Image 1 (tube, one colour):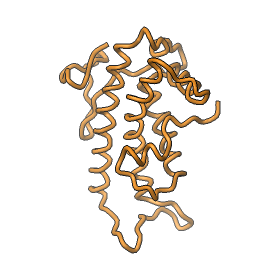
Image 2 (image 1 turned 90 degrees about the horizontal axis):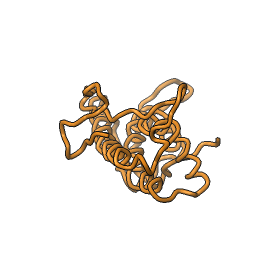
Image 3 (image 1 turned 45 degrees about the horizontal axis):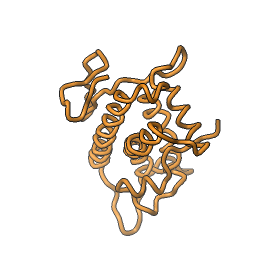
Length: 184
């Protein structure tokens, strides 16, 4: 199947702090990485593939459309920023790795970069938790969420990540903050 982007570079620029002048090639690469690494992990391969097919065929409807337009795209936008920020900071050219800068700007420190990535990761986790709650409450309408078989990525229950630490109860259910996280 050809590559299908769940979000466009313009969507990312509208919903995050990303400047309109950023090269769309960098954005598209980061979207694909975030989709494959993170979104597929939380949706599972069967649902991820079903959504890719529906998006490419322009047949999103019902619970699938709500999932993508209300939940998955917001989560993906912030996971994309987690992937994109290091790429915007460092450039690879013939001389090796260099820090980007222009005449009217100064490069940020590594601490500043890590703080911004962490802020994007917190936003991504918030929207991913909302997506997880939606999926938990709509499994009958979205059967691919629980149909993965061997050699496919099964949907990962939501795991909370904060400041470099990952919290999980081991049962696949995070319930310490019922406002954000629900159990299936």
